Image 1 (spheres, rainbow, N blue to C red):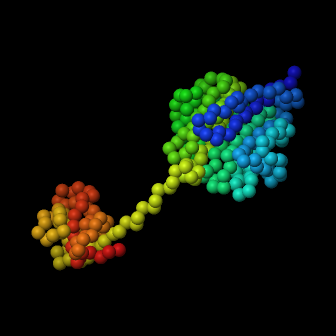
Image 2: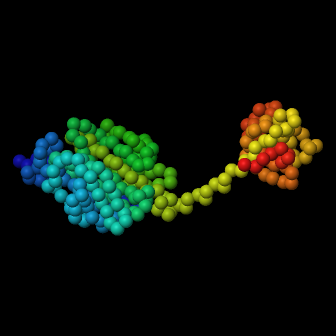
Image 3: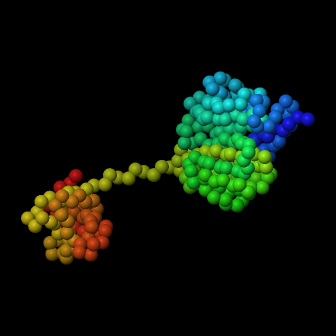
Length: 277
């Protein structure tokens, strides 16, 4: 009687609201055996757009690619089209299928996808992601942030959703097995890199002023830009302070206040004893 080979399959999600259909399945293949033998391993690679698949520099074909006659071992996988490429280390294990799904883009930060594989002698589900600390929801229930390990997940079909602020959600389906631990390595695409959210404008450079030498060794800070205004603090010679506003012969600064000692107080100093940096 032929042994089982456990196959893992996922489909790329163009939108976070789409749910992939049946993506994990178990197939009976003659001549294949479970993990731990020298029998062949399987690899499935899908991509958007269609791309060439290379394993250790050898061209295997174009996506969608599938083979169940590969030698088990460590490989460098490359999926490439035009100026968009994805390169990663993969481990092919005898009797199991490793799946790589990728949405390619010229900007690597705009790429997304997942890499799925099985490991014997362990159970449960282990999910990692780039970036880390993504929210993980399984079957509509929040289970934690990546990296997350679920030992007691029930065997069968599940829907997995990863989300993080500033990144596109990634959703796919899995089927867990009592005989293997399922690993999922998920990449989320940056909304800024995808052009969905514009990057914030650069902050203007902070202007500063250095307090010059005074006869008293300090400079009085006034509440208003006037010598008759009450003193709200003092700054020392050599202090470098942020400029908030300028008017006439006066400069408004942010400083450590005296005598109250409150940080971040605002006040006015005479520009006669201040040098702009």
